[in-house]
Image 1 (cartoon, rainbow, N blue to C red):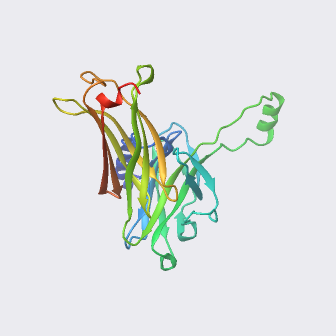
Image 2 (cartoon, one colour):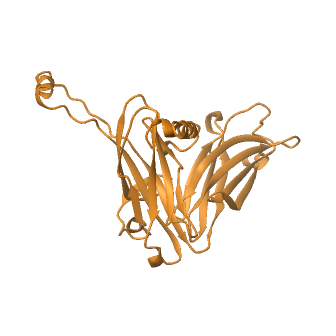
Amino acid sequence: MKTSNGNREKRNWLIAALAACLIIPTNAIAQGLLVMPRRVIFEGTKRTQELNLANSGMDTAKYSISIIEIRMNEDGTFDQVSDTTAGVASLSKNLRIFPRTVILGPNEAQTIKVHLTNTTKLTEGEYRSHIYIKALPKEKPEGKQLKRMVSNLSLKLTPVFGLTVPVIARVGTYAGGVTFSGVGFEMPSDSPRINLVLNRTGTMSTYGNLSIDYVPETGEPIRLEVVKGLAVYTPVKTRRLRVNLAKKEKVDFTTGKLRIIYNNLAGDRLVNTAQEEIPLQVATQPH
């Protein structure tokens, strides 16, 4: 959407809404580009979704939009793969995206249309591909301007920034959950942290928020940490985490206990929860 008088109010609202999403993962904010929502989910009969892009930077920028396949590792990192890689249930052949190239001036926003097609060929289960939004480098100067630059040549590497947005289509009833294993507390060099493993159950990905509270022997729990947007994508079954904990007043890591909760979300709804507690009196005893 362009910045005409007729849609200026909508443009300003979109910029404000995107700017308010600074808590979203860093892969959804790159070099002044804001993207919302952070995930695109197709469930039920929905066949069209919107992805909103906004340029919060000071310069005009050009972006290319494509579809790629990436697979999660147990440590939460990603590797780019192909749609024929074993275990990858690709959605790329069922997605149509328009436009594929976007030019945004400062404080300008635009909506990308994402269409799901040929769904009758999808059997029950979950399918996923990723929209890749890449900032394109500025065009090289031509003619006399280029000759002047060559005469005073210096090497300059221009980094290319990009981000990915998962697009997920679920056919049938959602089936996914999480359990904990390998949960442990340690405090090396007086730096408290939690180690744990998220185990994905069912046939579909999980996505949610992890919270860690300190529960004293008396009194109210104290929130130590929240990890938002924590996913375990198919086909990987486990994700290993190390979460550093904030040191706060009234928190004694030698008494009480730690309570760990993972809320698994399907879209905007809570579908299930995993919970674990660590008695600190036991966790801090020498082994």
